Amino acid sequence: MSYPLNDEAKNYNNYTIILPLVMLEYRYMDNNVLDNSITDRKNILNNEYAISEIQENLDIKGTLFRGEYWLTTRQVESYFNIERRTLLRYTNDYRAELEESGYKVISGDELKEFRYVGDTNVTNIVDEKVPRQGIFNTKAFLNLAMLLAESPKARTLRRMMLEITTQTVNMLAGGNTKYINQRDEKYLLAAYYNEGYNKRLRDALKNYVTDSRDTAKYPNYNDKVYKIIFKENSKEYKTILELNKKERPRDTMYADVLSAISSFENTIAAELKKAFREKGNIPLTRGEVDEIFMRTAEHPAFEPQIETARRSMASLDHALRKKQHNSLAGYIYPVDKKDFERFLGEKSKSLSDRIDENIDVLKRLKDK
Image 1: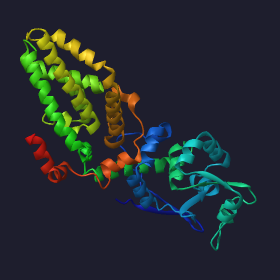
Image 2 (image 1 turned 135 degrees about the vertical axis):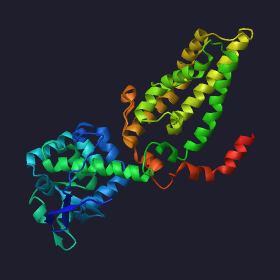
Image 3 (image 1 turned 180 degrees about the horizontal axis):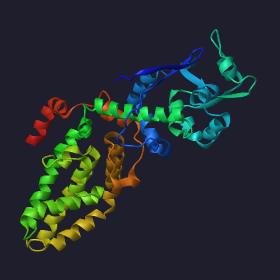
Image 4 (image 1 turned 180 degrees about the vertical axis):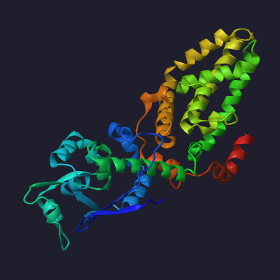
């Protein structure tokens, strides 16, 4: 990916920033989302693949100091065209977040070393005679750009960052994120086992439950499972992910979600069989089945799995697919580096490649 670059550049000894001139369209979030959401800021900063593309397009450099490029407060103020007091306000108000990204204040021997890196005098970009100096690495600089509300350059940079991040995820996912869940190495077995546990539930509903609307029996209880696990029925889920009539919701679900569904459906199937036998092999009514669903959903053993499933669906869909599950808004957290690696990195693969690699394992499981 590449973007047209303008001729405007700020040069300070070892330091250059080139800003793309193009104003890019971003269809999911408006331009103010980053300064309003720490989750969305971290979802960019934790995505090493997107950060790499952003760096490549911005050509962000700085003073090479102890193996990393750094920018001084004077450079940052000049680039964003902001006053010292504005920068101080942001570094004070967002100190913990910026420090987590890499911002730090140096003093003493470290500052003296920074003033004279190698044979290059960088005092023209460092405040003279100050006992301490704030410096920003690339991530801290980008983090600040996502926070600054007063700077037009920061707004342009935010918009470009959002666009590059989306394009990077789509590219690494094979062009579309609808089935990005299948790139996880945990998905294949989770999906395989889910088919078996789902069949147990279908068979239990068929054998142990009476219903005058037999054709609607399974869809009704399938929706109950979905509502319990992630608070949406099948139709609502398909609408959010824009699935067509032939696309199966479970083919798009993450491994954690499928595992929670499998555990719940397996338990429900066993409870239906138990209640059927205790009743003298008399089919269960809808009311009796609803009670079993409710009782099972409230069992403490399922709480951790349901919490994990909701957090996975809400957070990963928000970060990777740019989809919002309103019923799970309270479960959205930043996606960490290892999860981006899981779905976008070297270990992530298409489902067909996974099947080819695991064909012997799948055959052994089928023969059990």
